[in-house]
Image (tube, rainbow, N blue to C red):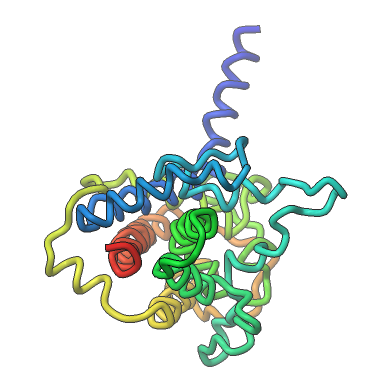
Length: 284
């Protein structure tokens, strides 16, 4: 019995990182942003978060920055009385399917605004609109906080006709590909390791660093994240040509993981400081 209990505990501890990042990662990005916005912006964000009960999603509270950062994922299972997905219209807003093996363009991926970068711009516009209702602005805020995080997970910005790496079984060091795919590794184990490696990412950054990292537009950031998917995600996964046919199973060795940790860490840092920039522009 003791051996059985130890096995169960070990399996739970091992499984948790796969579910941790786009909670842990989104929360970290949101915390970085709040540490770097102007005081007036911070006050405005907190005031709007206090209005999120208007969204009528009590099972997905968003009155804190941490809760707000994962709200858009939390509400995915919610149903209307007729059984349809209450927020089904927002499913495609979390990503943009831009092939890393073709020239970068958002034209097809963002058709009719159904992609993450288009929705980031839309949410900023709603937040700037003083005539918009508190409910609409609160929803725009929680979507914005989440979507900026999504954009900086490279497999939400660039992929290879494999559902953002979800179709690629992947071993993570000694961990079996039965437990992971390429997407879940970047969502979970790799990102958690990156966030917890080195000094805390949640801090006030120097003005010059903020200006450098947050420079550019949402389209520029989309292109950059797409490039990271090409240069780091798939190049490491395939140990060579990122556009070569993908095998059904790949292995990220410990050496691969060591090289990818600073890449994943920088993406979280970028997400946080760019979210701060957008919040200042919309609410500061």
